[in-house]
Length: 301
Image 1 (cartoon, rainbow, N blue to C red):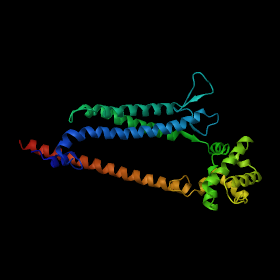
Image 2: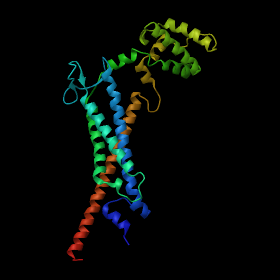
Image 3: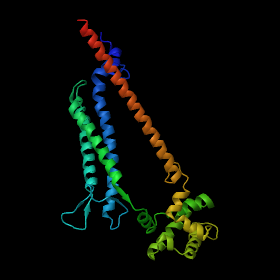
Image 4: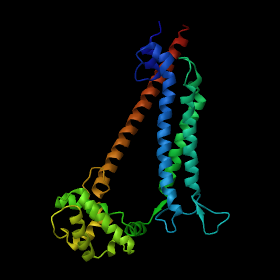
């Protein structure tokens, strides 16, 4: 009988699929489908990122753009003032192509007799994998071409009441107010600000005190002053201070971002080491196979 363990060793596999029927008829069809799920995941993540950046091109004053020229952008054929993000368009198209190709093995493996070769086509599966490699390469180009304007980004945050929930969070976390009460107060502040075209940085503290007094009564809280000082109230609405004061695991605060980037670098290093070790193992195994074949041929056997 075929020595499956020896064959796996000669070909550089880490081991065998224990059940022989599974190895010959099932796994070889499932593996392209599993790879397709990885390709799909890569493409979906890339597509979501691209679309997130693409929304900037609908802004009259964006804060994240591609560096112009160099194949990244091109001038619109109709509107002289417009710069089309060609690299983003190309990467999105590549991601869509990858998703399309990844659907192939799933459809081919559906409703067939076990062992049929529909989903095992090496050329087609190779094209699917290459499509994911293309997406990653183009995505890397996008990341390298991004130009971020921090001042403009902060201006955008300060132009609206994006940080208003922090008021409710601080009132609950520091002053033990029910979140619904703090949320109601923050909502009333936003309503007043929008009705009077007031930005967060310009909101009058005296008006906040008045709104708090009314909101507290509406929520059934004991009469009292807004527990935040004016300095704290303004800091609570400052996006930079919000990020700086965050203590959530996985949050945007600089220390946590550094930790996550370091962890990602470590994981990538470990994966690179694993790939190098597997490649060396496969090369060694195939070299041993060739050497043993050469011995067999030399012996005339």
